Every structure is written in structure tokens, then in C-alpha cells.
Image (cartoon, rainbow, N blue to C red; front, side, top):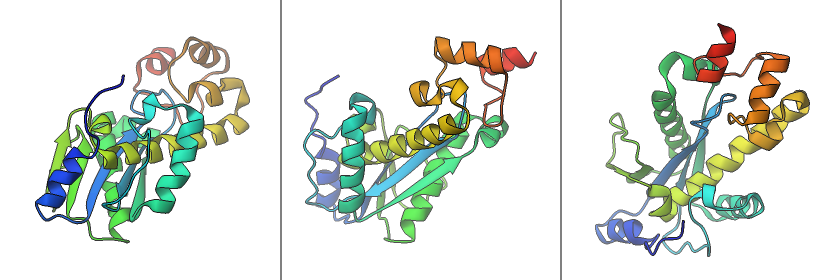
Length: 207
């Protein structure tokens, strides 16, 4: 959905307040039955421009791939955080998403010193620097939008690797989400390592 929201508004406000290294963070993969949740953290220069960048879910795969390379090459720094399906089952997807974001910020912090963090609706109470959770932040912040692309493409590439190992499950098509064909494949071929055992359709099959 297109909006008239200024994607740079939050960053402009923070630059005006004196912050220089502003980090956006977002995750991909809360809903799938299979695979990890992946988060990215991204710090952009204050003159960063990328026409058409928005929430990664609104972009075609071809455009995400193109933006992925551009963001990596033109960011001040970025980090990736990955939390496995096993840990998602242990701590729940909400906490796993939060942990993935913290891991991504930690990796980014090895390269730059972040001063302020913007997240897509996720409070990060353990963070030692100012943090703001913005509802639908990936459509309201250029930094979060950039992070959403990095997270989504990273996770999709992991699903392509899984598809090569287990082509019968069709991971390249559904990326682990509970589509009709995916459910049919689970019923036919069973559960393999990497499934989230606490998620409905998987938990039902295990009964």
C-alpha cells in the first residue's frame, strides 16, 4: 500500500536533535513454519537516497535483490542476526525476533557506534542507547526499510539453500510459509530438522 509518509522524516528529526549514527532494525520470518527468524540492523549516511525503497514486502524480489546490494555498498554499516527454529520453539517468536534484532545491532556495533535505534514496532528494553519502536516502521523510516530489505533477502537466500537440499518441500516457492502446497508436502514427507515444532500445522502433525 502506497502512503504519503515521508520516509526520511524520523531520521531528519533525529539529525536535528544532534544524533549522527541512526540505526534502523527489522526482522523477516515471523510467520513461516520452517527456518530461522532473521533480523538486520542498518546505519545509513545522512545523504542516503534510494528511489522506491519501502517495506520489503511491498517490493518485487528482483527489486529487493537490486536494493540489497546497493544498501550494503552504501550503508555506514549493517549487521545480521539469526535465531534458529529450535530457539524460536524454546523462547517464542516474539522474543526470538527481539533477540535477532539485538544480535544484528551488536554486529553493526563492531563497525560503528550507534547513537539511536529505530525499530519496526519492537521495544528493545535491554539496549543501552535511545530506542524508538515505530508502528509500521518499515514504511515510515528509510533506515528500517533498508534493514527490512537486508533481512528479507538474507532469509530468502537461506530458503533457496534449503530448497537445494530438500527440493520436495518447495522452499524456494513458499519460503517456509504455510501455503497449501507446503502443508501437503509436510503431510507427505514428514518433519525435517528446521521446522518450528510449536507452530500449529507442525504441532498438529506431531500429534
